[in-house]
Length: 101
Figure 1 (cartoon, rainbow, N blue to C red):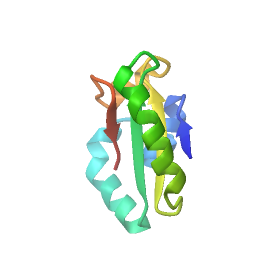
Figure 2: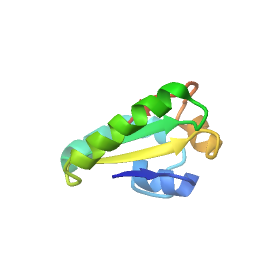
Figure 3: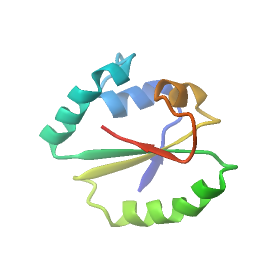
Figure 4: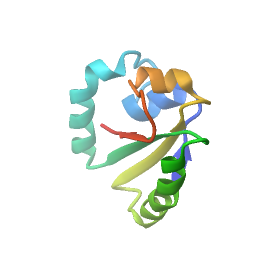
C-alpha cells in the first residue's frame, strides 16, 4: 500500500522517526544506518496531479507496493503542490522524484 504524506510533522515522523527532525537532510547518513539496522527500507515518491510521468508510474508503484513485504519496505507519496514545504525541505526540484533513507 502507498500512503500519502500530507503534513511536515507526518513527514518528519516517517523519514526521521521524530517530529523534531528539522534539518533531516543533514542527518541522512544516520537515517540510512537506522533503516539498515531495522532491515526496513522507505521509499518516498514525490508526485503531482498534473505530472504525466507520475501518472504513468503510479500504477506500477502501487503494484510493487502491494506485492512488497510491509515488514521490509514502506511506500509513501508526497504531492508537491499540496505539500510544497515537504518537497522544498527534501530538496525536490522536479517530479517525479524518488527518495529514501
